[in-house]
Length: 280
Image 1 (cartoon, helix red, strand yellow):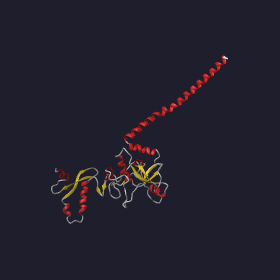
Image 2 (cartoon, one colour):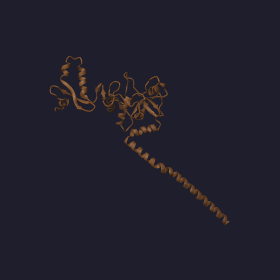
Image 3 (cartoon, rainbow, N blue to C red):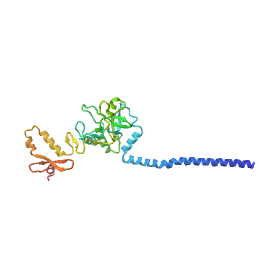
Image 4 (tube, one colour):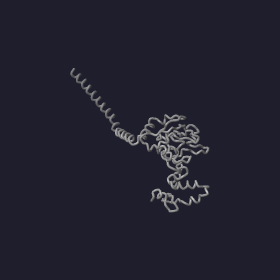
């Protein structure tokens, strides 16, 4: 009997040893992923906290996309979209940095900053709301219209990092022939709106380095040159035009490699506008 009991005890001990060994193997395998991915998860957690701290708007926009914001958009509907989730269809806008009506994009930015305009306060000449048309294409939400407006809204968003700026958009489908042709062009000679080479992430002004920003047809950042041109325009057809224009001149004040900055000068004594204003 003692021999039988000894054998049973030995079998039980062997079974317990095997079970313990199996548990150790399982525990070791469970630990491996933690050893491998634990540091990665920790780093991602730190990065998430940093992003939410220094740029909450971008953090929230990433969360909006990650939670399926793009997939929930319904073609044919008007929906609020985070500006940071939108992409330009072009790489550049007008060289004069103006809208079609001649007003500067910087003028519109100033209106937004001073709350004289809201992100959705854009209208056509007939007074009807002018809403951007956006198209989801290859996982990116492109503005098929209103690239200049997105430029203004992106600058405004950059100045408001604590919260997302939203803009109402018409959701269009790439499967709809009209909007597919608008974005991608067609064989009938229609040029595509989608010409970006940066996946819609970068924007610049056209015209090269010598182009200048205008507002209503006048140089936005050379105020004295613009004032002189306004003065000349007002005097067109006036019989005193030559006399009045002869009292002042607009001459280069500072030469650069790209353009001259001008200043207004009284011909009678050679004093510049700056000298008159400051009594120099």
